[in-house]
Length: 203
Image (cartoon, rainbow, N blue to C red; front, side, top):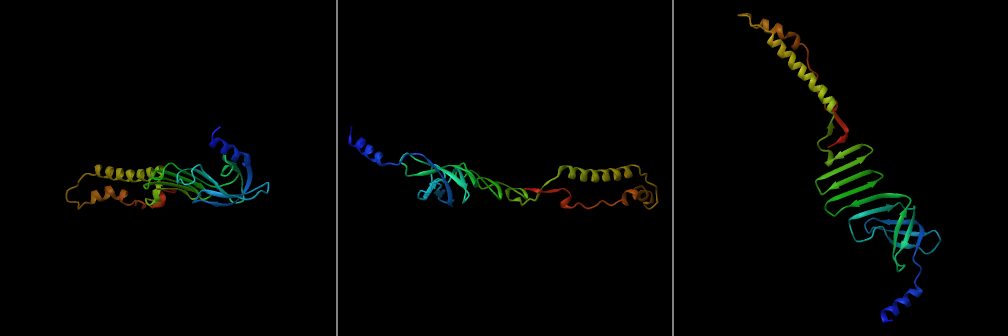
């Protein structure tokens, strides 16, 4: 047995057994990706419990437990560092594939997904907003088709009136006027944005 093995055995004799403990969350630090907990067995508070494997990383999958919720904290082999294994109430979840590509956040306000800096989708109780929604709501295809059909029918009616017209010499346009009179008397209603815009899905 070498010196290293002797030291390891001496340290292990005083080490607490490795295991897990049920706790109540008292604080959450989203920047440090840790939480503080009070064990249900009334042991001393456990501070700085890891919420993900690499505490310094800004990517990965992280569940942020709600303050006051129950968690199960597992201890690493030395019994010193803890990590949250299970939660009963999650305030938010973050999924980051890498720092400059895909990121998703799920919380009570909704779901936000970002791809790099140029593509984003937000889902909440008001609807869906893609890429900031500056272009307005998505078009309702059925309503636009109905509106286009009205305009097309109107143009076809004018064509029919013009093709049925026979020029009459020196009538001052009376025959033409009579031919298109029924068409000209029907005004088209102006389109409004709300007629064909889906405000629940913005782009």
